[in-house]
Image 1 (cartoon, rainbow, N blue to C red):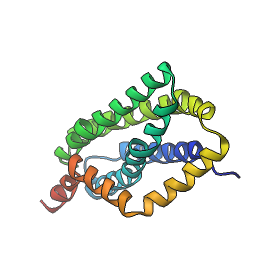
Image 2: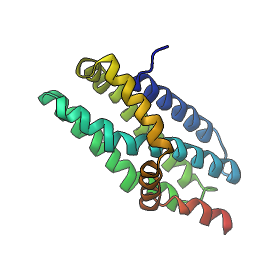
Image 3: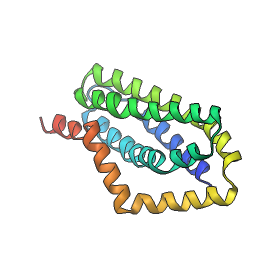
Image 4: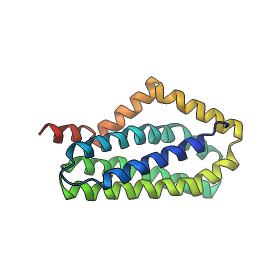
Length: 173
C-alpha cells in the first residue's frame, strides 16, 4: 500500500479514539489503569498534534483557499484549546475521582470532534491540494520527525505546557 500522510493521521485518530474508549470504561478505583491510559493517549496525541501544527497545517495553509483557511484556523484553535485548557484540567484532577472521569470525557469528545472535522473537511481538501507523491513524502517526513530531536523537543515542550507531570504527582501522593 502506498504511503499517505492522511491515512497515517486517520489511523492515529482511530487508535486514540480506542484509548479514550478504554479510559472511559474505567472506574474511580482504577488509579493505575487510568494513569497508564492517559499516558498512552498523550504519547499518541502529542507528537501527532505538534507535527500537524509545525508541518502539515502550515503547508496546508499555503495552498488553501478561503474555506481552507477557515478550516485551518478552526483546527489550530481546537489544538490550542485542548493544549492550554482541557489537558491541564485533566491533569489537575485526581485520577480516582468523578472529576477526572468527567474531564477525560470532555477531552475525548473534543478530540473526536476535531478528528472527525479533519477527516471530513481538511483531509478532503488536502487530497486536492497535495499530490499523492507529496502526501507520501509528508508521511515519510512525519515518521522521521517523530524520531528526531526536533520532534522530541516539540513533544517535551507540549508536555510541560499541558501538565503531564500532574499524573505522576497524583500517583506519588
